[in-house]
Length: 265
Image (tube, rainbow, N blue to C red; front, side, top):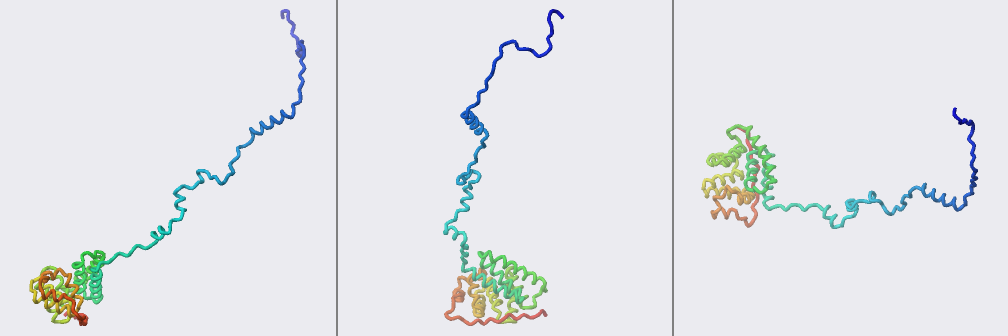
């Protein structure tokens, strides 16, 4: 092939050879390199100062307020019981009549109980917390009354019929029922007091005052009842009525007798 000859085998260097001399590293060089490598491999040190909490571990202001003790005056104000509400003087008068109505209800004297309970609603409209219980027992009295005969036969039935008649403005019919009760039980102060009311509504002052004085003599509690009873308003200008309401100098004995109830004839 041409004028060139292929030479097989390792190539031979024809140029001059250079010798390389390795010098041993000094101890100072090793120290510098070791320090540099150690600095690169050293992990970041965590803070061991436990006295400086992080923001996440630090309690909030709301939590600190809950932990801090409250003043003694503030604790006493929150733990002390609220003062009891002050009662009006009329409250105790209303409760006294209410209790008389319950006693009559327990004796099954439904007419007398209904009349007394209705007087609490009429005379003491400001005692609303008592009215709910009064209406409850009034419903019981009315339920028992509807189970009886239409024509009143006993004292309780006549008293209840007279109460309904007075509330309906039928004073003649009320007086007729109450006179039958008075004839059967002359010392029934409740019937006699209702007679005073019926006569007062008919402007019969003399009869009304006479029955009122008799009712007060039998039961002094009727005096306080008459002072606030709007059904006796026609008698307010009567001198005999005002003198009947004055407290007596000496207390009179209570001559009340239990109401006698006869079975239906």
